[in-house]
Length: 109
Image (cartoon, rainbow, N blue to C red; front, side):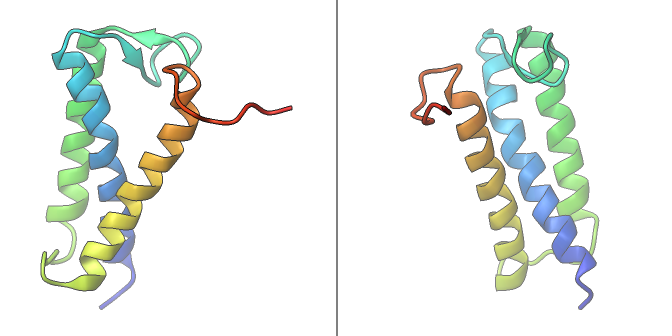
């Protein structure tokens, strides 16, 4: 198998993991950081914007995982690529947004 489906599953995992906080925050009626805030990624976007952004991430993640290649939940390589993408975006977001929400990101000096 080519390496391109693995790359697609990696980014699909990242998009699907990124959808969770935006979609859930939006559904709860809470503002949350998004690329459309001012300043981007730091300011808060409305709950409606977050629902739209979260849904967009779900659609892109679906396309990357379910419509590229032949993703198999019993294929260790497929699941590993997906899981690494989801895990890395989760860590990146935890570090980046932890400072806004009381996370434990260390201060830079």
